[in-house]
Amino acid sequence: MKIPASYQIKGIDAYTIEHEPVSSADLMMRAAGTVAEWLWQHVEYDTSFKVMAGNGNNGGDALVVAMLLAKAGFNVECFLFNYSQKLSPDCAFYKEEIAKRTNLRFAEVTDPGFRPDIKADEWVIDGLFGTGLNRPLEEPFVSLIRHINTSDATVVSIDIPSGLFGEDNRQNNPEHCIHATYTLSFQFPKLAFLFAENSKVVGDWQVLPIGLHPKAIEKCQTAYNFATREEMAQLLKPKDKFAHKGIFGHALLAGGSKGKIGAIVLAAKSCLRSGVGLLTVQVPASGNDILQISVPEAMTIPDEGENTITAVQIGEKINAVGIGCGMGTSVEAAQALHQLLQTCDKPMEIDADALNILAQHPEWIKLIPTNSILTPHPAEFDRLAGKSATGYERLEKARDFAAKNKVTVVLKGAYTAVINADGEVSFNSTGNPGMATAGSGDTLTGILVALQAQGYQAFDAARLGVFLHGLAGDIAARTIAFESITASDITASLGFAFNELRSKTSNKHS
Ligand SMILES: NC(=O)C1=CN([C@@H]2O[C@H](COP(=O)(O)OP(=O)(O)OC[C@H]3O[C@@H](n4cnc5c(N)ncnc54)[C@H](OP(=O)(O)O)[C@@H]3O)[C@@H](O)[C@H]2O)[C@@H](O)CC1
Ligand SMILES: [K+]
Image 1: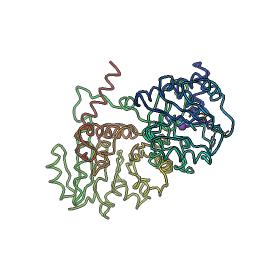
Image 2: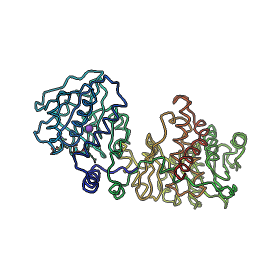
Image 3: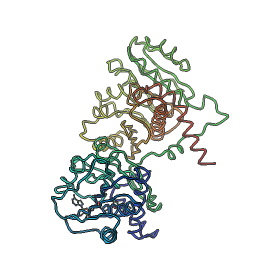
Image 4: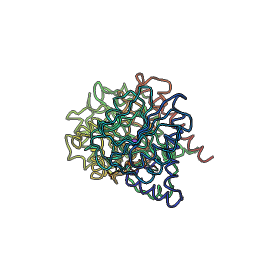
């Protein structure tokens, strides 16, 4: 699903109006109708609404929502905040309509000091500002928003929380934005929803399709995408009935150190559950028995180092190499990584301590083979590319980093961003807070290297792998509380995740 910028949405909107064709007032009715319908499904029959409309089309939507709610028999009070005495044409049109209604209370507000009374059990509909916001909010809106935020009411923002920009909020104050309980976004998610710093503002968000023109959506060029299940199902390659293990690739995992052999065990297990044909694991000598006993399906190469790896042996038949899990940042481990980078021309998946070593030796980054993946969490990425104050800033830095070093970067987070060397970004849509647990990253490494060994290109392997990892976590969470999910539970659910994704593909073709 594309994530167009606010200015692009305006263009798609205009194209729809011209080519469907549909009048802008009717399109507004359609959009507001989806909001009203969502509300009917989520509120009690005796819920009271306070609808806050601004002077643009977001306000127009709010006026229509107010009318539809009143028509359905709800108790509705609607305020049109028109300090500037200037309404968009559609907002003005629906103001005339709402003023005629007798089944709701309506007032146009021009007094900057007026604050509507809001009760804790009421629902506030926020239609003050939408994607037309063109500068940070000031008084009197800031005080009005603070008044709404400090009420205990449930707040539903139409399209986007008022005061929030769709993309870059680096110069914005989150306290000057509506803090929504729910945000109902028209047709597409907004980029801003996907950054941790905006989560308090956006609340739970959902996309409501409003039938914007498919041609305009297709023509819209954006670097940002939200990975849907349908898109990811199309990436998954079929498994041939006559296949044998030799054609599913041979992965090599290298890592582990004294006290952290578990990390490489976890990676090995998830790798074997992700379709790889053969797996070899290189571990410090002291970890060899642990590995052989815990993962009998894997072959092992005991390193000469007793407690750390010192040199990685890549056989000719290896198709992809995963390195980093639990390897530590010792001088020997760093040397092993350096030597590997100098000799390896296979796609690599570089994680955890290997990333920390790279941060200490940035001159080695240029040695990373093409078609490789780096999987940093925010702190690891900051060590590689410098500190970022916001998620937006970090994402832009990661796009630069991926382009400059010709790698795929998986920036982990609530909406993990997979970024390719062309600067394209795919945000993951699966996963849950229970997955923020020890070893979760190691299981991801195993999945990614398995997909790379099977011939998936870095960007596809990363998008698909991150999606499956999150889906496995979601499947685990159906029966296990977030608090109790372990990395092993994610691996145990991987088979179900592949099945769910594949059944989606077969449904599609049946
Ligand atoms: N996507 C779609 O297809 C559809 C979209 N629809 C809806 O349209 C919405 C976008 O509507 P929009 O473009 O009219 O903008 P909107 O946010 O209502 O406000 C603009 C007004 O705000 C003002 N203003 C701006 N910044 C300000 C500030 N800091 N402080 C004070 N004022 C400020 C600006 O005035 P200015 O002062 O700049 O002249 C202008 O008057 C969109 O979010 C969705 O809800 C649906 O109806 C149908 C289908
Ligand atoms: K809004």
